[in-house]
Image 1 (cartoon, rainbow, N blue to C red):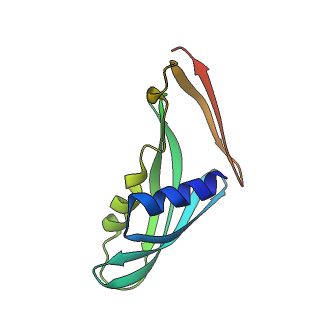
Image 2 (spheres, one colour):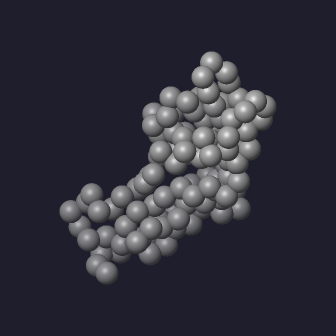
Length: 117
C-alpha cells in the first residue's frame, strides 16, 4: 500500500517523473522511473532511505542516483524526487505526536508514534 502511495505522490509532485515504481528492501527504497527533460526521455533509478526529522516528519533522502543516456545531471533527478518531502508531517495533527521508530519492511513501512516530547 505504501509503495503505491509513494509512486502516486511522485507522479503528482513532478510532471518530469513518469511511471515511477517504488520497491522496499534491506531498509532502503528504490525508485525506477522515466525522467522527461525538454523533449527527451531518460531511464532513471534512485535509492535512498526514509529518515525521521525532528521527531515530527518523515523525509526521503537519496543515497544513489543513476540516469541513463543524455545530459541529464543527477541533481536534476534529485530535485524532482525530493519534491515529495516531507512524506509525513505529524505537526499537522492536533495531537503532539513524536515518531519513535520507523522500520522499512519488504512491502510496508512500520511507524511508532507516541504522544508528548
